[in-house]
Figure 1 (cartoon, rainbow, N blue to C red):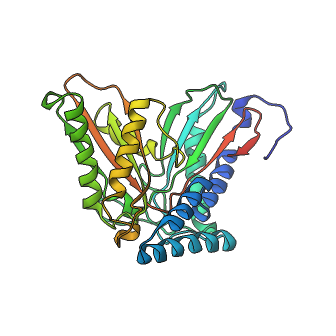
Figure 2 (cartoon, rainbow, N blue to C red):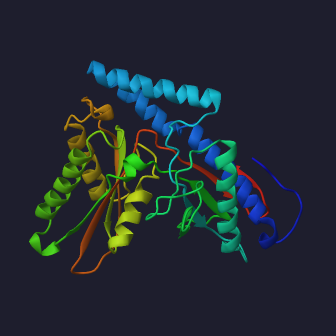
Figure 3 (tube, helix red, strand yellow):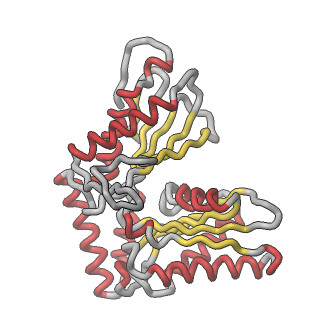
Length: 307
């Protein structure tokens, strides 16, 4: 924990420079180490796997993680597109401008110091100079659903392989209710996993966003990936669907890196929002086995806690 002892208002303590420092630190953590829940899930998959080719792939992943952490080098050559999630808690006069500028400056510095592959380009000309550009880094804001002081920042670098197999579909509620609608949802997810094959570098984590509007559904799917591996939805019915879908996905036999095996996904998480009476948007977002993320909480007095 990093503590500052000078006494000022929140506006003066949570500064652009502090946001920049935190951004560099959490990006470095995210790029060079895996969260404990993901490492444990990979190790468990390795010990439970019976297919020899799949075991070789999983062993290579675990060795890769160990070397990256020891050498403090990126886990993957694709260091991702810089995405961030910010939870806003109780803090007077906090400046979103400082947050945006601090994160942007942090990404620029981290690109040079970690280093990160320059992944960001113009969508038309395909030209770029680093990891910042028009609309990038992208920051998703959310008001904290529990009472926290200050704010939380999560770095979520997203690789192209997993992002490129995202799926979206507008289901039609009138086609069926209850079990029939659930079957259609499950079939959409299974089809997406089969179509993706080895492209998202499985074993993946799968986020499923249901409801809201079209753009909200994809945000829900991506936000679902932030939940710890092994956690279940607080709603018992949705938790049941998560378990059943995860079992079905892993019965497909896609396996690590698409070469066959028991573990196609380490977990599957669903996040929902209420939607229009005539709509049922569903989005799927994959995260590769290198499920990188790191978070920090910044308190009003300038204290930084890395989570």
